[in-house]
Amino acid sequence: MGAGDHPGLRARGITPNQVTAMGSVLCIVATIAFWYGWFWTGLATGLVFMVLDTVDGKLARCTITASKLGNAWDHGVDLVHPPFWWWAWAAGCAPYGRPLDDATFWAVIGTMLFGYVAQRLIEGAFIVRFGMHIHVWERFDSWFRLITARRNPNMVILFAGLVVTRPDWGIIGVAAWTAISLIVHLVRLFQAMARRAKGGAITSWLA
Picture 1: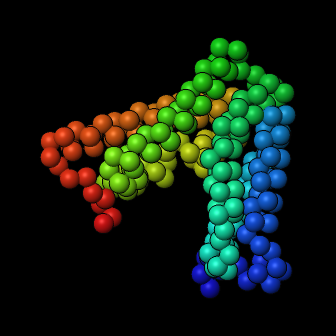
Picture 2: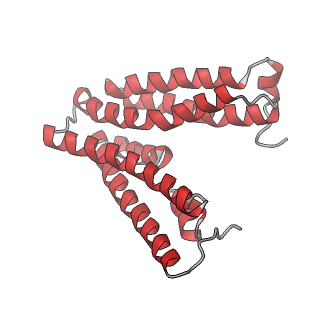
Picture 3: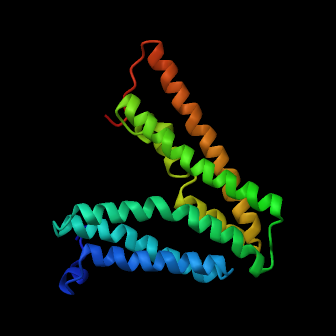
């Protein structure tokens, strides 16, 4: 039985869109929990959402029930929710008892929002210019994708901060890692452009 097989869900007549809907509700619950400083509850709820986020796509593929609506819904939630989670976490530091001062709060929020959007734009620019995703260019890029400032690596940083009862350090760490990841992506884009300008080929190391 492969990782994409979900006989229990199929037997119960649960559709991929229903899984996506359940995940969306949990995503919102996690956001609210973060906002109120209920970080452990939010992390647990977010973890279940992240599992369902993987299940719905696999279920759609193995049951041949993928749809444009389901695909747009799933990817839309994936794209939109991370900034709301980070904002809610930063706000939740106050009721938790580890508030960020105003300057730090807005520096963190600005860095995360700008970095999140800018990285997506860089990824899109790389696809348009070179016909492939930046994370499949060279071996380094595929490795860096595993730790770059996306949802899952950021959640690890937040978890580490919470373990030592410093959720404020966690969100500051996420902002710092977002800035570093943005610089790495920007450098890689410029390196690819420079190589192309010199007549070099830009091909995936996986090809």
